[in-house]
Image (spheres, rainbow, N blue to C red):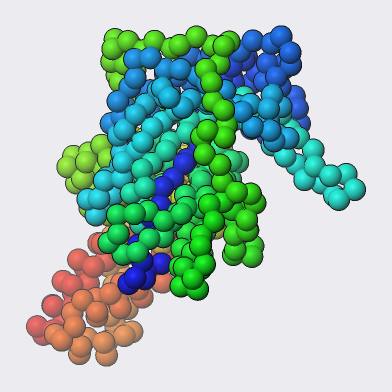
Length: 488
């Protein structure tokens, strides 16, 4: 929201579930969608006498994320108990980090050149999940998610509107997924965002009182919540009211936020070092080894696609928007070295199907494009078209037939369905003579619009041959015959 008298100031706390096989302090399975309360043990539900054991891979993945964002990796990381009571937190405390997190600083540069600073990235355990039933039954708790390794990424208050915030989140999520440290499936709660927002007088260095909106799990929701809360706070100030520091719940159906409770500070959580967990020492050699495991990120692939494959930057950005699309594209290029043709087919056909199949909106990050059509079949269609063995119309038809039919092979289907160009040169000659004779009145427009006239006759030949003529050959032949006719 824009207002000439006020600046909006936004800081984020992003929680991303780390993609490990087991939980952060026990050996329970880290898996979404399991039967209620089947992935839990005495450790993750906080039974007396149980002792946590740190998951090394979760630490390594947190370090890896920090390196991707240019963060400083601390040499000594400490785990602390964050004390508060809520039904989904069975121990009445959460193992987290405050004083000595694993990563400090770093950030993300937006397209405008503005740099959004990170304050920290720390590792903690996730809480369980409340399942709200009827008023009679009340609410139940599923502790399967309790103890899942969670990466909390905290920004500085550098964001000023919903557009910047969404761009930052898209970039952040994309990096985590490409790095392989988190799936960030927002529809499954794999990435959630808390928005801390305040309003201040334009140009003032004094920040206003902030509110926090918790657990926003879609970019659309983040955008709507920021726009609403900015407007609400400005209207409160304009009316002479004070902003109350509080936690607010966003109701996306109503398009409003509601007060949940007053917002506490870190002192209210009575942090103290967890006596059951040792300080984690992180040496430089380990950091360098982890750095070697960072794969090519989206920005690296964009550079390759533009400089080596010769793709327009627009294509490169679309193809790398989601890792699974980029991976599919690269698999196709390995089979057939025609990057632009492959890019066109993915962007025109595959993304169209994704939109209709899953309401594709860049928030669902794990889709197997092989279920639509394999790289082998897609490149086979492109090759048939490239070698002029099939018309574009027939190629599109072949694509539709093969989609979602993994046992079919493009070449075999094209042959069985009679899609291959089987019109002989002699038949093409006869067809050209026939259409020129039947529609001779069109010849009078050739000198004014030669391309239009030739395309008209090609269309008639394709109809006569039921799509089996080669349109390129037809064009050359027609151009030659028309010129000969007009000379007479």
